[in-house]
Picture (cartoon, rainbow, N blue to C red):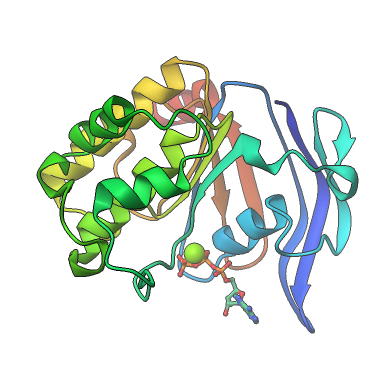
Length: 221
Ligand SMILES: Nc1ncnc2c1ncn2[C@@H]1O[C@H](COP(=O)(O)OP(=O)(O)OP(=O)(O)O)[C@@H](O)[C@H]1O
Ligand SMILES: [Mg+2]
């Protein structure tokens, strides 16, 4: 799915957070969004997912205006805030993933993602007893399980240790190589392990830079 953002602006009340931002992604691109705290990264994602109504400007998915778009199951999303999560029943990790699987309820698929993310050993643990980093990876597995065309991850490694962060980026690269579009927000993870194709840098003065990987690497030479 093509994503086109045209001159997007967004404000919370009188506070403008995004100003005249434009970018285009083709199917299968891998965008890394970088920027300091408060530069508007999460706000942009929330515009893209329809949680924040577009102030001015336009967003298109395959040339369809976001206001007419209703194919949201194509998106997998792991939000930045999940730590206050508490499931209403004491289900296991496996049961939790089963309940939230829109597609393919076969256990082998769930076990594969848990293994790739380094949390296979917690498959039968109570979902409400996990550490922050374990829970974050369960949410990532949940988003991956639903065969998204576009996977959006907001600071996905914030609670994950170094080794598991490496596993995680490998798994993202594998999904990307299968043709899934990736949009990944991070403020300090190294780009070394990412097969990214584009970078969006957002700055606190409301300016931004959207660049292809070739351009980024040329500038670094
Ligand atoms: N619901 C809200 N109401 C009012 N202001 C908000 C709201 N959400 C975010 N903001 C403000 O908008 C600005 C951008 O916030 P945003 O969460 O998009 O930044 P971010 O780049 O994701 O930061 P971080 O790296 O800390 O996650 C901040 O100044 C923040 O205070
Ligand atoms: Mg954020």
